[in-house]
Length: 317
Image (cartoon, rainbow, N blue to C red; front, side):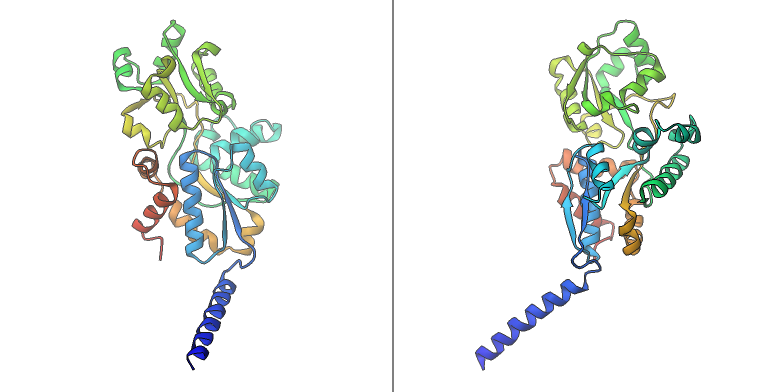
């Protein structure tokens, strides 16, 4: 009898496990989640993963996949099913150089949150069958950061004053990632808008660098660095008490993080929008700064930071 009960329990356990697997909305068809390689992207990728897993979906984690082009190419090729993108990134990297799109976009579109999102969402859906869900209210725009001491000593708090300082021969060494130094909505946009340019000797370009690395270089003053590439929602900005130079002329587009899915996936599982949209609605700048700081400053793993956020905000059962 004891052997019979044991066998019965093992059979029931196996059947329960098989039944649970069958209950997954996408059983046998896992959703592959990618992300870029900096903190915010990885954490947002983990948020997507944990929210979907909590709803019973099978998920494959491919966060920290690579840069902008790597993730976009993987999404279009079906190698991943979703990654968190930004409307400003899409306008500048995919539609700015298309003549008909450039005319339709207009000069002010990239700086307008609603117009920017509506543009990239409609173009991506029509051309690439990529579906943008609800954008976060946060704006993780590119920025230039300096130490508070440098800002106060030189009386510079915005990019107008910074450009004047550069053009008057002021000493500047900028720590930056290679993508920011090259992409049209990065450093070149600051050059064009504010009328200054840095020489090769004034740039410390770190291949694949994240803001955490460029801001660490600024904090340490390594190689004379006194300016750093930053993102508007960086957690390290709070920790280091850096000053983000204001962008009054709008050199930067609006960058709202948004889950972007292959259309095939959303058509198969439309309920995903109802899972993720309420979560991304919470992500304003202070919330993302705090979430990023929990990883970059407090030392939590991206998994733990994502789980803590979801639990604290009532998104996990």
